[in-house]
Image 1 (cartoon, one colour):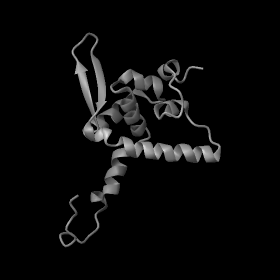
Image 2 (image 1 turned 60 degrees about the vertical axis):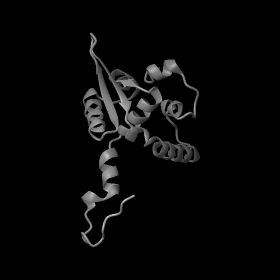
Image 3 (image 1 turned 180 degrees about the vertical axis):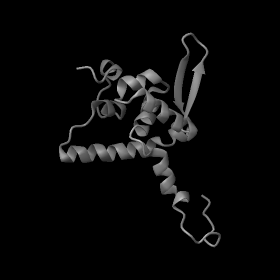
Length: 142
């Protein structure tokens, strides 16, 4: 890992701080869920997210574009009628999985300690609950 030369610039620049980069890349409530969902499915289509997450199409579109711009996902358009679009993780996106798993595990354990209710879809994605395809297709239907 290359370290910067402290004599080159003695002023702290928050914009160039790795913490700031991570915050700017991930400070969106949906990015972690979208990355994990794509990882879980291998390749995911737009409508799968609109069925699994309480997210508007506008916010989903914006978030997917940001993840693509950040090099974390790839968008593949298949020339079919109707057009089919799938999202997959890049190597950089897949490299996040250990970090996301550690964060989820910490949150899951802490919520259990506090007696808080935990989302069943997330538990399925992370192996804390048996996979239920019917639920996963439409987790909001009662």
